[in-house]
Image (cartoon, rainbow, N blue to C red; front, side):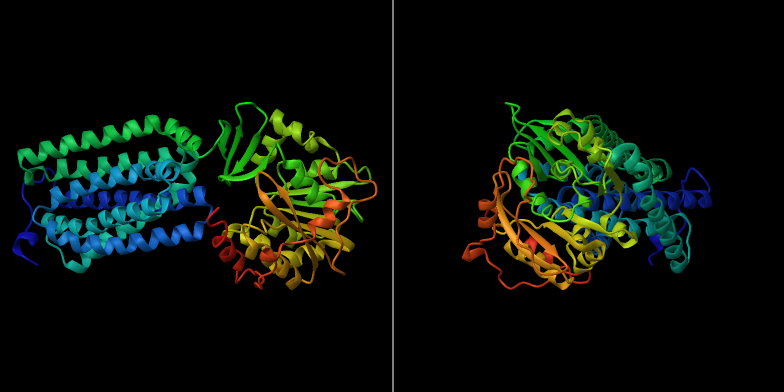
Amino acid sequence: MTETTTRPSTGLPVPPRVARFLVLTAVFVCAACGLVYELALVAIGSYLLGDTITQASVVLSVMVFAMGVGSLLSKRLQGNPALSFAVVEGLLSLVGGLSVLLLYGAFAWFSAYQPALVLLAFVIGALIGVEIPLLMTLIQRIRKQDASDAVADLFAADYVGGLLGGLAFPFLLLPLLGLPKGSVTVGALNAVVGVAVVLWLFRSQLGRRAYAALTGGLILVLGVLGLAFAYADQFEVDARQALYRDPIVHAERSEYQEIVLTRSLDGDDVRMFLNGSLQFSSLDEYRYHESLIHPVMDGPREDVLVLGGGDGLALREILAYDDVSSVTVVDLDPAVVELASTDPVISGLNEDSFEDPRVEVVYTDAFRWLQENGREFDAVVADLPDGDNVGTSKLYSAEFYALIAEALSDDGRLVVQAGSPFFAPEAFWSVGHTLEEAGLAPTPYNVDVPSFGNWGFYLATTGEAPAPALPDDAPPLRFLDDDLLAAALVFPMDRRDPGVEASTLMRPSVIEYHQGAWRGY
């Protein structure tokens, strides 16, 4: 270590011990901010794409690599470590604070989410990587200290700050401010602490021009972040609208997902989207729900279990049978059921099905509920999101279907929405093999739903594979009849079983099959 970097500094406005404490406090705060940026990148990826594991892997690996690059780059910035640190913190606060808005814009307007994510993760990681070496130099200039002791102090402050940031993100920032405003607020805090500590504590090491430039830069960064905070809500509205064809009439972020309703200009087509994925269109949802429900009702149906189905549209079809005595709906998100019960358009579509006294709604994870369930059901409806990510793939696993098999009465039936045999054939046929792996005998069938395209289902029992048919006492239907059901059993040659494997908790192959689907369409 050179004499320049180890001799005690002069001109400090406070005693060295206090100065050292202030620098370590800055390390603590900046580390908390850095972890918030990291978590924010993961969270926005989860919100927009619904694949937390992949997004976390990309963010963490790129940021760790970039931190190493930043550490090497810091060697070139040691000539004036105070000035360099202030500039780095100003840039970090600006990029990190705006990262969520930048990513949302890249996703909504430019379809460049992944490149933008990698670039932002690299820039933020590199700037974080520069911090510690510069701080080490500043600490040593305040008071000469054994290198191992200085490293221990710095990393202790850094790690404890990371703990604070990690806890503040889900329990404070997201509930109070939301993701965009929370990130901007953290950026402002980062700028104030990181730059202000240099402007005050190390002002004797800055020339007049450098001091003026840093002061102006801090004001500029805070001004930009202030504007971002003021317009974050409008930015989010504009970016969200860019993702949808029709005007948005309702949007909210629940604890679990983003819920959006759109309505066409003529008012005829109302659509619900969860995390950007279409759940139904009012123009043709009856095609999907008639095909899902009525074949499974051709048998015992006194007690029915619905897994998912928070929009109440499958429930509408079930309740059309007077001999159904109870329906248990297990849905994760109360916000979806609340919207389906109170929005006049959706409640009109589902015919106020949640008001029926035969219906009981349970808000929990379907897998966990089945593990604790002690009841048997005559019919089970698995109306769940596609298993295209870690969170939903367990709902298409052999273990999940084995739990359903245990919940079926002796003559009970299960129906599963299984995605598109045309656009995602490997994923669709994997569901069939997974049902077989769980000891169920499935029969596949498919129909055309214009807003979805070709869509497929499985009807299954614990005995022989059932033949889908309509109950003799089926209510009047608009789409499904016996002839159509017979045709629904036929799959074109280029969309028949390609020989795929079952999906399990430990080997969720359904994710891989979904990732290769929908390409070119």
